[in-house]
Image 1 (cartoon, chains in turn purple, red, orange, yellow):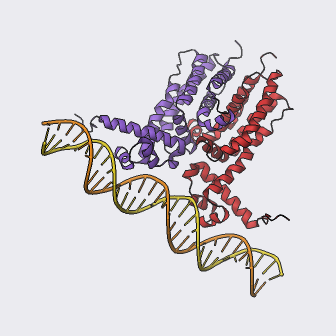
Image 2: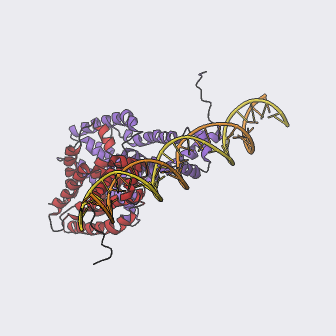
Image 3: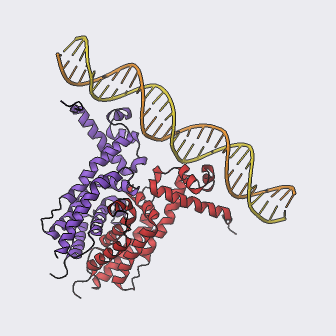
Length: 207
Length: 207
DNA sequence: TCGTGTATTTACCAAATGGTCAAAAGTTTC
DNA sequence: GAAACTTTTGACCATTTGGTAAATACACGA
């Protein structure tokens, strides 16, 4: 029996940690790391500040925990892109999955965006260790599809950038979009527009 | 002679206000509003904190001044899009101008992004008063071009969103891009990719 | 060069904020 | 139901931070 056995967390512990992380996601994604206060998180979680510090080592600990969780969620849709599948289907499917994530997980998208915007002070190691290898792998897959004539040839790296930016934009710049569309929900039209956009871009020249 | 004549600002006043705003742009764009401190701004400007407060009413005043200036810069490239010009040329030109702005003014891009990301607490009025009318006007222009068969038909609003997101991405997510491209500068390849992307998207179906 | 308005600094302050600690309240186990 | 534990709270602290006030240094026109 290993010494480091962390003794399964109690029911109450599980509930409260989850409560805190959910509240923290609200607050951090809305105000950024420095803009968020432990008191705000405490209130949003319905717990007292010292109680929060009973479950987490500190503000930074909460933030880091959130960021770690986020990384997995964030890579998932890209991982799902199957090198064995039909190239156009796979890529357009990836676009749609990313768009759904913006709609369903806008807080996560904004948390991520805020972290990157400020130079990824806490996430850089994750980017290097997790994202970069996956990115390289999937770029190679896409390049393979293009070399095989299944897709039009463009720089796969910038293709991915454009997919990320166009889809995440709907979560990250929601405040602007709400003003410009007068509150109308953008996702249906976005889905169509992005599908056409990437379909046209990737259609190989000679059928 | 108007009573409110503000007595032209002295040489030293002009220099210091400029110094402060430039330093503040550095600090605000790197750390966000709450993350920035007056001391940081003071040090970056090479002035003492009370001296900074001699020139500006307070932290918020500096931020607002910056945001006001920014709005003009930000709308310029869109204003330049000429309804009389060749549609494809005008739109692709707009894309390139926005991309140049990301390269030349990344701090401004990040300041803007950070403000929107947090719900545009200080900029919402500007968005409604300045951006929205311009947005509507230019959407109508683009729609006109499409109706005349000069461009493929897509929702002009989402077309603009995709232009903004893809171009600003290179400034706002620079930290991520640096990791993924191993420090290689992305702008040449981005220029090509985006040109092809929007050219394909906007090419009318039947020549 | 002197005097007047401008610019700058030194020394502070009050509020906010991340965090601690010991005591109290609950739970669980035997 | 008492012992042993986990959880929660109330009071408190040190630091950071936006901001102020009065005194000092400086610029510049007469």
